[in-house]
Length: 414
Image 1 (tube, rainbow, N blue to C red):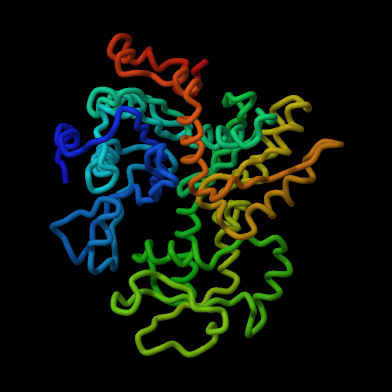
Image 2 (image 1 turned 30 degrees about the vertical axis):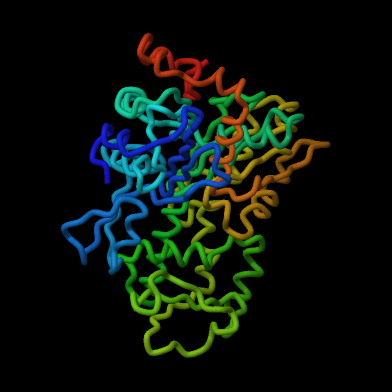
């Protein structure tokens, strides 16, 4: 793997028309060229394994680790904010190298996301790295929700206003976009996401069945396979109380011989005896109680708003006319929006808040996990607009950080 930026440039080749689109999530990164049909989805993480103490695995290199039991994760993000630039820089080196994208940054434009509320020091390091270390030809930096709104506008040109619900690994952001610009006074951060759900599920399984405290990766996989958002809690709790409940699922832990990931048995095999090599856990109420945290953070003692409350609170900060547009254009993005029942539950809880003669509509623009990336692709393909908002390397070299003011989508930018 190239060890520095110069090595990356020497080992890569791409045309000057290439635009790298990079949606840096706190769990996964979605990356690719604007000319690609779809992005690669890779871990935005560096792993250490007990079985291979001398090596660290960057992102997708984890597939080279033979025994992934008791992994240690090093994430650049914490609580939805990029906090450790050194880790992110190592991951970016890997992404741009010939092992992944195989690009020469000097010959590329860049569209990259950053959290809504990042530290100023990290923003400065990020911008410096883009232009001074990687030396991209030009760049545009914005929150993922802004790119999702771009995809919405591309598909709905007569609807310039929407509300983006970005529910990811570390946090959920409610982001109103009015006439193509983020209305920052309406942005709300809800400190719950996939990580909190995984940790809560680990605690419940450990308390009720077997200890899985050191199996974060496996429980996260099982969560994604088995969990759902309830649209009728009373009915689901009644079903969960049955001895042979139709909600019960049997999930298996990897033995690294027959299975290398957490898995869920077929429904018809739920109550069959485990095979000799299988270590099974059974989930019933846990399947919907753990992700219920998104709508009821009080489950874990957090008195702050859940997602539906935050959506209503954000919309109420605008005039009634604008509220009507926001209620009917709620756009979902982020991995947590993949839970079955998420869209229906959000619509169900937000519905009573809609003003008279209004309507609520919750929209998925394809896969919520990659919505922001495809929004970046749409932006790159809108050449006239991209030329207007991007900052070139020459502009940065002439004006420094001030060249980015008013172009990059950041709080306090006009």
